[in-house]
Length: 193
Image 1: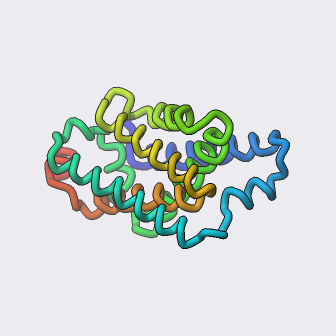
Image 2 (image 1 turned 45 degrees about the vertical axis):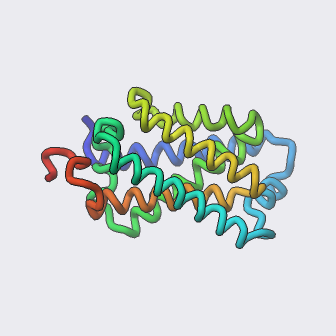
């Protein structure tokens, strides 16, 4: 099993790779990059994007908590990867990690893939990329559902601000819950209780 440092390095490398892929793809798109970035990060409806992104993020967190409260730990088991990643990280690094993940994944999956082949395919690819959940049906369906919500949010708002914000809020609150042990004891690795 990978240690904390290896998991953290893997996270930074994978997110960097997603950003690199995104920028390489952007080089081959006929639309000028400035126009694409302007459309993605349009601030015309900033308050609407803020409200919608926050609302979707909060909705996902509420559903997540209900599932955790009434579900079984096995449904959510990712082998302790998320716990190892966040349990000893300072809050500032958690913020940076969650910003990096939200930004890189939303640019690639919503801004590029969804714009090219549609929200269903982008959500399916997003789910498959979260490979550690492929043998765990509940988290797999949850990731797919969250991806669909983020895709719909992008469709409705027409920019990435809302989906990046929702993605960040979901990851950040879940990371803080692991970091500060705000989950029932049964959700933590046995050797850490």
